[in-house]
Structures are given as C-alpha cells and as structure tokens.
Image (cartoon, rainbow, N blue to C red):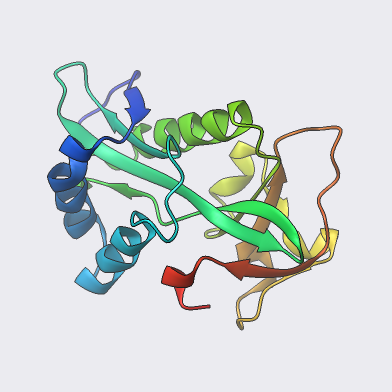
Length: 171
C-alpha cells in the first residue's frame, strides 16, 4: 500500500475523463457502478467545480469524488456520489482529500446541504449525521444509519423531507 500524507485536489476537467473512468473501473465491484458515476458526470446532473480529482504531485490521478444535485423535499441540496480510489491507494487519504475538496467547493458556491448514502463509520468524520434525526427520508429500503446529511452552514438547520435524486440515479 502506498502511503501519502498530502494529496493534490482540483476540479475535474475534460482531459481527466479517461483517468476518472480508469479509477472507477478499478475501484468499483462492477462496471455498472462505474456507469452510474459516469451518468452523474453528464449534463443532466453535472455541476461545474463539484467533481473533484485527487492525485500526487506527479500529476497521476488516483481518486475521484462527485457532488450532484438532489432535493430534500423542495429544498435544493447536493448528494455525494460514490467515491472512487485506485485500489493501491485506498486508505491513504486520497478519497478523503477529494471529499473534503468537493465539500469546500460546494460551500464556496453557496450550497448549503449535502446528503450521502454510505458507510456510517466513514462519513461522520466529514460532519455527516444520521439523516432521519432531521426528518430526512429516502424512497429506498436502506439501513437508517447509512443515510446521512450535512449542513455546510452551521447557522442553517437541515430541511426535512424525502430526498429526490438526479435522474441518472434512477430514483
């Protein structure tokens, strides 16, 4: 396993598309998962600056995180899509660096709320809490602890309601 303490992050560009696809195919169990993330990187769900890549100082990309539009009830929010990191670089902080950079970019763009459907032991470190505690639900049968939400503005309480995802999610 390669260990790094510092990763370079930046917004994804068109030139990054082949490298991001390589990362997705290596990181996810099936090509269908990679296809889902690719669908979120199309015009229907894309938000400029909120697809972030992470790499070393040598310029080689090893990780990718993406925020896409969703709604909590009628309130616009973001959803953190599946994060991908090349297997040789997993658990080195590359994914966390990409997530933190994406959340910071969202905050800089004036976004207020983010949701994630993911592993409950991983996302609280970024400030996510159990969504159900805020009256946020989802139209899928998922473990309560797996659906989390975050307010990027500590003065803005999370809205309540059912999450509606971007069309590529199919939900």
